[in-house]
Figure 1 (cartoon, rainbow, N blue to C red):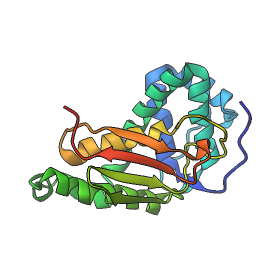
Figure 2 (figure 1 turned 45 degrees about the vertical axis):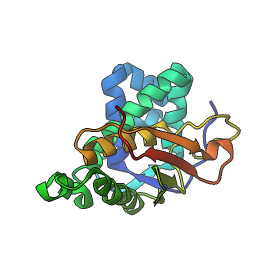
Figure 3 (figure 1 turned 120 degrees about the vertical axis):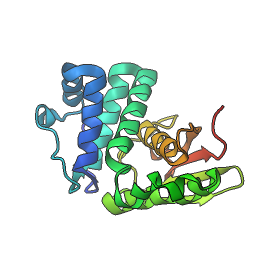
Figure 4 (figure 1 turned 90 degrees about the horizontal axis):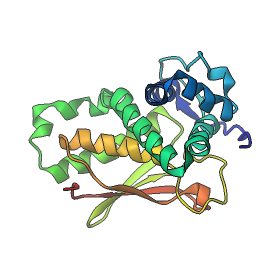
Length: 211
């Protein structure tokens, strides 16, 4: 795979660190090192980003890690690993973040499910817009929420693909929805992806939980 030119847009160090730690937990240290070498990021071997919210991890490097997962494990295996890493990132980074900290409070827990989603999903989007250069917005339709990433750290600089590849984002949303709803799983699927030539990356979130 080719190196990706730097984006000049950044993800918080802590989110990148959690993603790499979760990948190491799944594939082991040697597996992570192989991914970092393939992604042209050997500087991160035994040298993870610091545990802070400084915006210093370039979108291009985050994309390279995603791409390397696909290259090494194939589309299906890479997708599974990316989903798991996304879920871990939400669990460790976002759920204790100021605007979402109140989700565990009794006053929130007793709200109707759709009210929780109506409050919680835009809150997640706002947090990402605040802590990173990933600008996110949410619209509500009749049967779903439409979550749009206007600058995507997962497919930056990739072109000409025939299917969406931003699975870490899908995993992060799945875990966020599980947390907001008190344990439900929701169908999240990406319908537009910048790597396919679209202007934005767009996820559709079904309002009704699975099962």
